[in-house]
Length: 156
Image 1 (cartoon, rainbow, N blue to C red):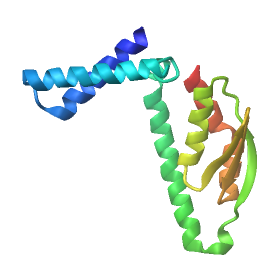
Image 2 (image 1 turned 90 degrees about the vertical axis):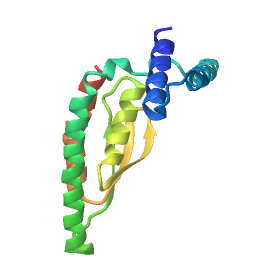
Image 3 (image 1 turned 90 degrees about the horizontal axis):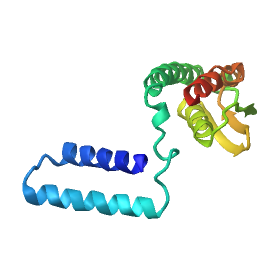
């Protein structure tokens, strides 16, 4: 029930922020729309702790700040190697073991790898991620476990 209420309030805030109209007709149409969306989401059984990971709310800004820094550093590294030419690029595959216990933790880790320029998660089976990287440096960074450790801290 808590997740349904939070979904309703989130949709209402989003609708009000984007609508800009507060006449009785528009507010009632917005309420009807939100009711229909919440009903459909509830029938689809997608309103749960995984769809709304409230436990991440306080920790996610710090993780995003770190991830944005990593994305910028990886961008600069990829640009540097593109300017240096094909001989400086050393693509390869590696398998990384995830220490996350929940599905959402694994998804955050896999997406964080893919968001970082020069790396992409191509397969996920259990706790094993197959990752393609343009540079061996990127593989070494992943194998150091810093991203895995931060996602595990986020999930706990």
